[in-house]
Every structure is written in structure tokens, then in C-alpha cells.
Amino acid sequence: MVINLITFASILHKQASIRSSHEVILTELEKYFTVNFIDYQDIDKLTPNDFSILFIATGGVERLVIQHFESLPRPAILLADGMQNSLAAALEISSWLRGRGMRSEILHGELSEIIKRIFVLYSNFKAQRSLVGMRIGVMGTPSNWLIASNVDYLLAKRRWGIEYIDVPLNRVYEYYEQITDDEVGEACASLAGKALACREATPEDMIKAMRLYHAIKRIVEEDKLSAITLSCFRLIEQTGTTGCLALALLNDEGIIAGCEGDLQSIFSMLVVKVLTGKSTFMANPSMINARTNEVILAHCTVGIAQTEKFIIRNHFETESGIGIQGILPTGDVTIVKCGSECLDEYYLSTGTLTENTNYINMCRTQVRVKLHSSAEYFLKNPLGNHHIMLHGNYETMLDEFLQANGCKRIE
Image (tube, rainbow, N blue to C red):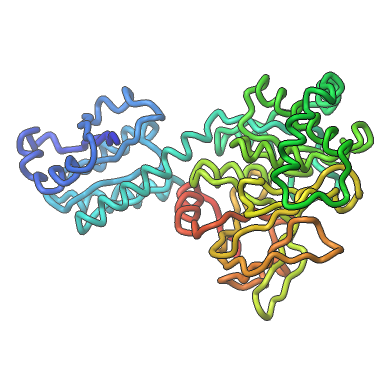
């Protein structure tokens, strides 16, 4: 792990005296990281992919930092151990930067805590950089009932570096028709053999769903997509099947795939993936008990790798195609949703998955979650319908990352 220390020091101090004045903290950093010392005059030689910290080595450098404002890494991380009036300068600089809309943080205090904090900041930095250039394929258009789930493509690209790419469904249909039943027969038999049971769905349904999966995957590979969101319901008229199986299999392969053309939810799933490495369950909050802070999340697809067992069903609303009823492990979960048109708001809570329910009038995969926060959010201030669940407690990691990127937490 490489840290670039952009060193700001008064011209009154020689380089040798800078090292000796800060020997304790610099020696500690070099135990854990490869440290490159970069003179502030060479700041433009660094790239956006270089993890950089502003090393405030002495007092009297406030004007030097101001002069290089446009070249400073964002957010600005200031390291100051207090020697040579460095903390005094860092406080002034941080205030000035925040007054101009730049997030900043001062690293100061116990060495062990500084080291821990740098690891967190580095993780956030790498996740943010990995998002840059990622392409989200929007296959079809968002479902017309997602009236609060729009994303401004341009603002999302400016803020996060991601691109939403429109993919016409006619292209999906074209590839779907080119795939023969024989090409997918073995894969269908293999998947059916792993299932706990097959209920409403027929072998013909399975073949159609697997053909659709291959068609979508071909587009993912051709267009170099990191994620896709699919206009599921519009597929049914043309293909006679739904996208539930395709989305489940794509998520298992590390290609983030979401339902109904939901632009905000697919971004939420992508953020979780780059931060935690985990796939997620995109679902409807289908029942809420505000007294007990319980919510039932339900949808007709889930990555099979996330389940302990799974049953092959049909799609709940249309009673056609293939749906997945996943039996998910109980235990700690995190629920998250990024919202607004420029993706600068979010909801975040932890909870305990207590039960896999089986209501007949809900989507196929259903889980009951006991939240560690108030369920009133869903009734009074929700960020739309779909929310994202993953196993494990990742509240601190996600909160750190989204806060670092200037997002507002909605309670």
C-alpha cells in the first residue's frame, strides 16, 4: 500500500530538519506503508489514482496550500502531528477548504488510531476509484411505476464517474432468438438438479429463461458492462419469460444485476459490491411493523450463491417464467439504498434476519428482518420502493464511504 505524502513546509525549514522533527510519526507510517515524499511543487505529477495525504509539516504554509487548491486531492486528508506548529496550520487550512465546499479531515493524535484511520480512508479511496469508468447497462427503460427512482445520467457521471448505457430491448430479443434449446439444455438440467424442488415452472419455462440469460450475458460481454438493470415486465410479451433466472445467475458470476430498470437500486448494489465484495438481495419492503421494527423483504429473484437452498418457482405477479425462492441464512444483515437523481442521499440500517417467510401473496423469496433502527423510516421518509440487503454488518464501512462522498443520510 503506497501513500504519497504531499509535503507542505515553510521555506525556513530545511528538508533534513523536517524529517528529524517528525521522526516518530514518519517512522510509524513506514512500518505499515510505502511512503513517497512529494514536494508540494510537484503535486501536479500525481494522478487521480494515487492515494495522497497532505503532510502539514510546519506552520506558515496556509498560503502555499491555497495556491495549489485546484490540484489538491479530494477529499483533502491533512496529516499533522503538532510539531513545528503543524496542527495550528492544519486547523486553519481545513476550515478554509470546508468553506469552499471541499471535504477535509485532519489526522492527528494517537499513532495507532492514525494508522487505523488511514486504512479506512485508503479503502474508501480505492472503492471510489474503482467506480470510475464502470458501465451500467439499462436494458429497456425503468418500469413506469418507479416514479421516484430516476437518475440523471450526467450528474451521476460527474459525481461518481459511472456511466449509464441504454441498451434497446430489441437487441436482447435478437440474441434470444439466436440461441437454440439444445444450447441450454444441459445447463437447465444441472440447475434443476441443484434445486430443493421445482414447483409451478415447466421444463419449457426453464429453457426460455436460460436462453434469456445467455442473450443478456452476451450483451454484457460485448458492451463491457459492470452491471445491468432489466426492464423485466416488458420482456414477457416478446419472449414468454421473465428475467428472474438471468439476474440470479449473473449476480452469482459477479455481474451486478437488478430488476425493473431501477437506476438507483442498481447503483446501490454496485457500491456494496466494490466496498464489500458481496452480492446483494434487491427487494420490495412488503410488510412493515413499526411497533416491533420488523420488515418483510420480498422479490422473485436472488443470487443462488446467497441462499442455503432454493426452489424453482414461477414469477409471482405474472405466474409465468422462472422465479427463484431462496432460503437465506439467518443472522446479521445490512439494508441500504442510495437515492435522489444525483445519488447523493442514502438509507442505512443493520438488522437480524430472523425468518424465511412463505406468504402466498408475495414475491417468491421472502425474509423477515428485525431492524436495529426505527422502521418508521419506511412509512415517513422512504427513498422509494426497492431496498438492498446483504449478509453481515457493514454499516460503518458503508456510512464512511457515503459520507466521504458528500451524501446525506436519511433516517
